Image (cartoon, rainbow, N blue to C red):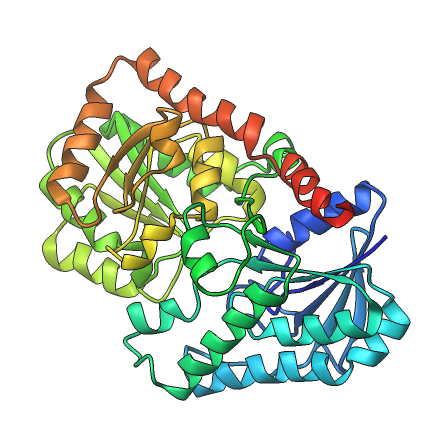
Length: 408
């Protein structure tokens, strides 16, 4: 069976995010499927973008046939990024007959963050007779008007709304990373029985075959532990969406408590956050450079708990599906999650403490509670999360759940 996955931002372990298409595709290849991924040549999420000289240039990575489409680059959200979306989808749409004839897909998965790729998927499906599955990462266009402040009547929003409705009406299944999106999708054209929730997960081999930390980071943690017996860790993007000011506020309030706060990663907010540390003299706060994906297990082994947060958003009524959540659980460390959401697997598996977004007092209280726990009790809390990931959220298991949709 031939699987074609359309994802503008698809990456790989070497290139960087987006990881989900790569992990699923690699598992499907192991299961005997032939898998192609059509992706754009540029993504702001990747650490390294491919060098592409022609459209549909092919590259084989771990048995997956990537086909790169030249879209142009962009620096931030706006007209330039929107133009790359239209180029990606437009080129697929124009080549739909050629794709159907030469790649012969049996299943087409439209999986980009935005829903426009459903039109290309549907057109290729009509020429090939393939089953079309729509995968939802983020709730577009809700994101545009609920977070981005755009008018619902804006032409771009209206275009995305039409595409979203079309995807729900014309796909055999809708796979959602968000657990509570079903009612919304039913209102927008999805039929009952088409909704399937398949979350993100972890790749266990990366945790088994981890790389050691550089010597300078080993030295940093050794010296930090001499002064601070408890370390609150954060790893990942330093972006506005991660609400790291709340963590800095908590660190400032907890100076003199023997608790250090360590942030590893990069992003557009990092320089400003470092300036906050310096201007406000937050002495128990440290910033580290990002580490490679294979170094993350070694990094988080030095943390006593892990922080993740986000600004309050109406979109979280659909649930959360952050990659960081599953990596944090796999680390086997208790999690302090500052996100206003109705329910997460952190509570389900008693793997940490959740408070509302921006609740500084709640964050301080949660960290204080974890730091004051018996070390064995804290260890058991972390291990419950790790066991849950290994049993329910490992990519091999998730890929098998997804593959059931190919055969039905």
